[in-house]
Structure formats: C-alpha cells, structure tokens
Image (cartoon, one colour):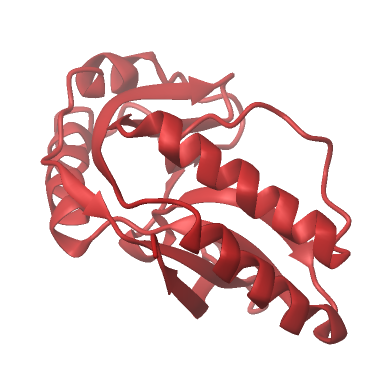
Length: 189
C-alpha cells in the first residue's frame, strides 16, 4: 500500500484556494497548457512520504503515528504565498504554526523509520501544498507573480492523517491519483 502522513486543510481553506487559483487561471488562460493542476482531493501537506508499505508493518506504524500525534499539540495554520520547485511544480505555502508542523513532520518520519519503513534521504521539511505540475518546462513566473500575495483564512490543525495514494491505472491523459484516509489521530493528549 502506497502511504504518506499528511495534514489535510479543511474544505473552507480549499474553497478559498480554489477560487484564487481559478481566477488566476482565467486571467492567464491560453498562456501555458503544460501545467497539470491538482484537484482539491490532491491538495494536502505531505509530512512524510513512505511509498510502498508492507501490511505486516502497518500495526506498528499506526501505533507510532498515534504517539507522534499525541505528543504534538494542535496548531494554527493558513495557506500563504506561492512558490515553486524549479520549473516542475507550483505550490502554495503555509504560515502560522510552521515550527510545530515541521516537528510533526519529523515525528511522522521517525515513526515510519522505527516501524521499519525504508524512508528516502532525510531533508529539512518545507511546508507546501502542490497546486500543479509542469510538463515540458512551463513558465511558472506569471502564476507565481499572481499568487504570491495569497493569504488564506487561519484554521486549527487538529489531526494527523495516514493517506493511501492510489496511482492512476487507466492510462487516461490527465488522470490523477486518488487519495483515501486510512487512519487519523487527533493531535494532543
């Protein structure tokens, strides 16, 4: 099962973001069709990507993620600004309890490692929610300029989610992964 730990923004935050992105896309219509935009279902803050996880590891992984959630207090967050990874991905960032979210990401990563999940090389966590991916080197600058001042309404993060990623299998152009929450734990004691 392909898994990752995540913070999921509430529907209200995703609605605000969807409206802002839609307005920018309409303003820049026809500028570049090499960006594949994520849907609301694909908009999350990945804390720790685990890849394929074998079923025997799941009970220990769940127990360790539950402890990570319990040791982390709820924190405020809002969608904020915009950034990119080279010419490959356009994302919206976060503001608020970033240090706490970074700590939750570290704890989720450590929980997976201790449960026996072979994790990728460790990097400092950058809070980002992917808006779109570029194919063929799209010019992201107009989108970055248009979204750099985006400020979403604050909300309280109160849950750590374990999410399953079901990769597309239909071979349909533009088909996106499907995500399902397989477990979630409240933050704090």
